[in-house]
Length: 209
Length: 200
Image (cartoon, rainbow over all chains, first blue to last red; front, side, top):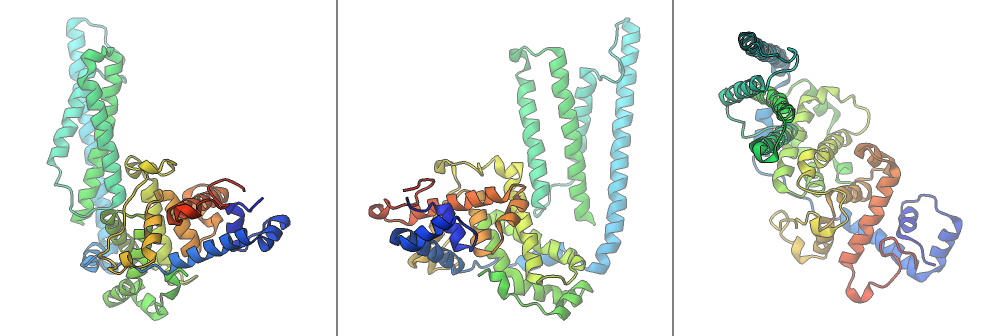
């Protein structure tokens, strides 16, 4: 029985293998040739020519990576701005939620309708919050031409999830969703929109500073 | 050997860069750019994404150069940042939604042949076959074979970087070699003993 490729790779890399396997590879011309082949392949990979980096890459790096002295100062400013942004967004969300809940409670009192506990928002409140966040998003600057891959990936993931939710919500009548199911979908949409606004805000703040 | 072993950045250049000297920053970029870009292109074959990761790597290197303590080779430190960024990208939901990293079905594996513009002679040389065989591998498998066989990472290190085990890295390497062999072999020679998981 010939040696498995795992064993040959271990022999090539100087890792321990069973004595009988090592002995077989030494004695067997087929396995010895195979060991030589994978050694040669490694050398061929190491000898592959390098790639040439994109032109103007240094200019982009230099523009993006600020000088050390400046960056420390700007990081402080950026941190303060980010904190201010989070506080502002939180205040907007709280105020919007407060007014929505208050108007909902007023309506319920006027109609004598039994309302859900305040911690569970109404469907209308969630829709309104979602719209407010959409408006907030529209007011943010356009996305930068160059951005971090991780930020782009996060935004992409959130947007995809929102698209899926929108698809579910747009098919709600046909899907015969209950009010509770719709509310869950809208609640998730509000949470995702909130995250999207925060990430986009942080992204644009990074550019300003 | 890893291209990073040839990187020579003098200690005084690193110190000047840590002090914020722009010319030292550029000197570091010039010394490291080609091996860094080559490494990134081997792990992430899509040129547009590789370009972004390349830029991000140097931005991070220059912003965090103060964190380099002088322990270990400077080239190795830069390389670890590039590798980390590439693997983070390959493991991201964004990338996974495009490609199936662990997919055994080669029909869904990323098949992106390397552009001849970067090295015009490649297509005409014997290395073109190796280039092609590498490019046909799924992203994660290709990363393992490149990091281990070319960059000299151990299976334990690769396992840690991928959040997996050393055994996972070993099995990916064996799978990569089996696939590359299939690609590189002539049909008449494809009957010998090291196909995929067989013993013969």
